[in-house]
Amino acid sequence: MKIIVLKFGGTSVGSTSRIKKVAKIIAKYKKKYSIIVLSSAMSGVTNNLINLSKKISKDFSDSEYDVLVSSGEQVSCALIAGELINNGFNSRSWVSWQIPIITEGKYKFSRINKINKSQIMSYLKKGGIPIVTGFQGINNKNRITTIGRGGTDASAIMFAKFFNAEKCIIYTDVEGVYSTDPNKLKSAKKIKVISYEEMLEMASLGAKVMQPHSIQDARLNRVDIEVRSSFTDNEGTLITKRKNIVNNKIITGISNTTNDAKVTLLGVKDKPGIAASIFKPLSDNSINVDMVVQNISANGKETDLTFTIKSDDLAKTKKIIFQNKKINFRDLIFDKNVSKVSIIGVGMVTTPGVTYRMFQTLAKNKINIQVISTSEIKISVLIDKKNVRKAISSLHKEFKLNNS
Ligand code: ASP
Ligand code: MG
Image (cartoon, rainbow, N blue to C red; front, top):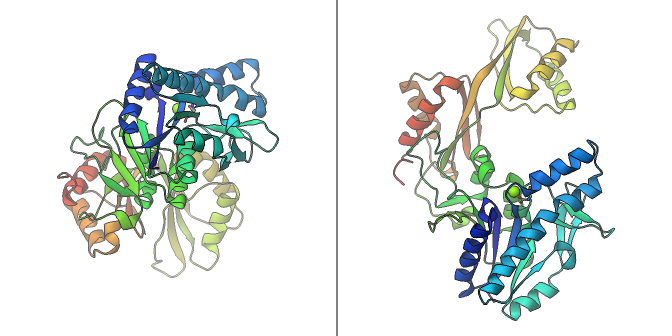
């Protein structure tokens, strides 16, 4: 029995006419596969439920919150199953506790760790199409839990894992993952295949497509994911392991950030332990430092240190640095008008000269690089925000992403 998991959510099930369309999509797969459907709530429903809880109390009980917000999924699952039955299929809905889907952890942020397969399995064997509520489960106290906003992606991936599905198809309102943000660059191309690692690095684009932690779940459990639109018939993007990718491209995608800030400490002592003294209190306060660069000191005594953080953390960071008795510096400067542009691709592991090509392309376009950081499959540069579009379009061309 070949099993696939289909996930629908939000706008894909946003109205009864959309749900009728979803039933047609499910029917298409029925010829070839045993199908397990995971659905999230109709768009807007979960937000409305959360607003109701806020009207009761700002401090609404976490366990009751989960009972409340998980109810939207029950509605969409019943509607999908009802439409399939109408169309002559054998289908029924399952609420998570009926299966059950077992979760672990705190209310609102639980994680699925087991799914009881027996009922669903025998239903599949009889040719039925089970429609299962995403985003939820029960804990060892037999209480309803939810697994975080957008959690139906993770539910679908866990079903694909436990049922050993051939693949997990995430139906959404975008056609897939693009080489760069199509709103920023018209020539952005849909990516046919991308590795989990690249997809995670492209989180700034990917987050809109899929929850990053679900991609991590898929990577750990080796579940192939296809992201595609329920609004068109076009093929989507396959997210899979590196080994499955025969790619002639060096770079798969280009991403950029919009919420970084740069901090520079001028004239700090050039001696062991200074960097640690600067960064320890930041880490103690959960401030995530991303890129770091330290200049070599001209006189052997003093140097400048630059790093980036999220702009939201800027005020807190300034306060912590000024209060830090362990360090001396001449001046502190910061800049919010920066953006980190990254080129991402597993191809760069085996291709020399990628760094040079990136820097030369930026130089030709008179774009100054402020900070650089690299990983095995990514090179990031910090540049002035006003140059982001130019940087993306020139790099997109340089690495031949314009021609798919
Ligand atoms: N309906 C839930 C939410 O809006 C879960 C999901 O969308 O996957 O967060
Ligand atoms: Mg949703």
